[in-house]
Length: 284
Image (cartoon, rainbow, N blue to C red):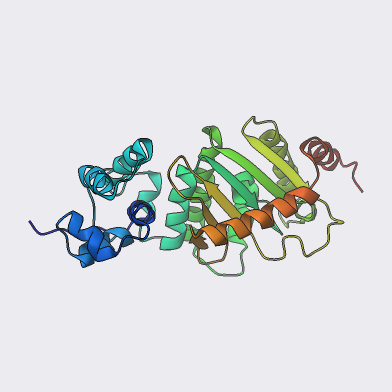
């Protein structure tokens, strides 16, 4: 039977990537022959352009001698998931693939470490703040497209209503933004941050105005962690939807960057106190 090529969705690529990690130092051709495949087929499976079934995952891992029953079952489960599921599937072809991939990665994560050097991160933005950020961006988009992007960003915030843990570092300077629409935008945004800070799955820290500018100067960082056996993913934000990697060395570097910024940020309780000062107009 001819193997059908699958759309290389982020889940297919992650399945293939995990199989590649389990293959270790076994050569592609040698591993492929264990299954009666040629090297090209295995290479395409590992890149996510060919689908592998759950049973094939189990058989392949058995032949490789992988001793990780729980991990194998998790990868087999995802391998058998139908393509095009999730609320974000409706936006395929309407937004960049990198952004679509990030939304899916974000939705599947067990925990998120999130830092932005300039603005309130998207998962913590109030509706008014979201609309300001998108509709007044220097890159021109149609009103209809802008409203779609607003809807997407607000829909992403549903991860916080699940068990997803969020550790967010927010620059205090973001609280000084002025909007033509009036001060109500920032008041609502501060209330949103205060509400989030009360959530049991959210750890929120403000980066003080007095912090040396080298902290956060390398851009926005998101580190996403998953259940076993999936590798962590790191994303560096950009206008095209960001760049994502599960390369262990790169992820570790960005984790260290995040930890260094968290170390100089205000503790959670002092963050909450300062947010209340801003809300009450007491902070000068």
